[in-house]
Length: 362
View 1 (cartoon, rainbow, N blue to C red):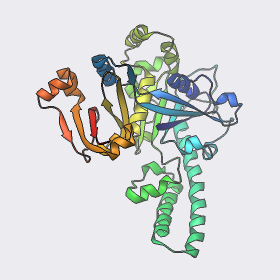
View 2 (cartoon, helix red, strand yellow):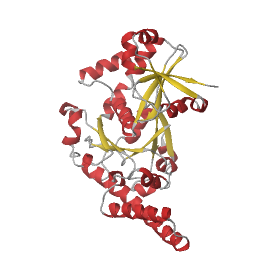
View 3 (cartoon, one colour):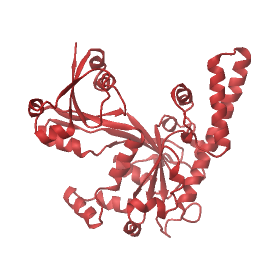
View 4 (cartoon, rainbow, N blue to C red):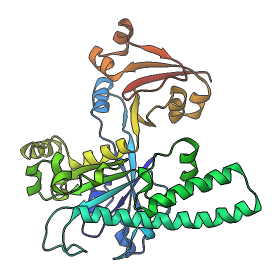
C-alpha cells in the first residue's frame, strides 16, 4: 500500500481535502486535539483502467490506491509532534496543504496569508525535528564505536554526519543525492525531511482565472519547488466541495465551465502516486480488470509478486502487450495476430501501462 501523510497549519483546508479524497467524514479532530491519526484510502484515477473495463466488462474493477493520513494537532504544535506518530514516520511522502485563499471569516494562525512563508516555516520545522533525531543517533553511534569499531558503523556515522551538516545548513534531506547502501541506512530513521514532498496550493475560486499551472509562480513558490523530490499541484477546496455534491455528468459540465479538465482532487491523488515513483500495470479478463502499483524500474518477477508470492516463485514467462496496442486492436487475439504480444523473462523491466498475463508453475 502506498502511504502519504497530510501536513499543514489550521485553516489551510487540509482536513477538508482529506475528507473529499478519502470519503472519511470523521477526522482526527474528533480526538479533541490529542494527535490521533485518521487513515483513508483514495482510488487513483486512471482513464486506461476505465477503457479496459469497458472492453472486458468484468465482474470487478479494481483501481490502484493511495493511503492518506490526516492528523489534528493542538494549535501551535510543530513538526516535532509528528516524529512520534507512526503513520507519519511510516509515510512514503508528505503532502503539505498551503492556504492561498483569502477569507476574513477564517483567520490565518499567522495573521496573514502567505503560502511561501508557510511552506518554508514547515520545512524549517521538519529540518529541526530531523536534526534532533540525527544528533541522538550520533551520540549512540559514538558509544557503540567505542565498544566495537566496524566498517558499517563507521560508514553509518559518516552518513549521519553528512545529514547533520545539511540540516544545520537548513537543507532538507530529500535534497541530498544519497544512493545505494547509504540511502538504505537512512530508511530506519524515517527522517521527515527525507520524504518526497507534494505541495497542494489551496486557491480562491477567483485565482483559478490565473491558471492552475501558474499557481506556484503567483504564490511565490517557484524557488521552493526547485528542490529535489518536491512537486506542486493547485486546487480550490471550495469548488471541490461543490463538485462532490454533483453527479458525474453535472460535475464534468461544472469543470468545463471553469476551464478545468479534471477535478483537483484527482490531480492531488495522481501527483502523490507519481511523486512516490510508482506506476501501474494491468491484468484484464472477464472476472476482473485491475491496476497494480509497482515502483518504476521493477522487474517482471517482482511485479508478479504483487499479485501473489506463488506467481513470483513459480515465474516462467510474462505475456506482455502494451495498453496502446491492446486498445487499438481491440483484443488480445488481434494483438497476437500482429505480433504485438511478447514473452518476457523475469528480468524484464515492466513499463507503465503494460497489460500482463503471468505464466507460472504451481
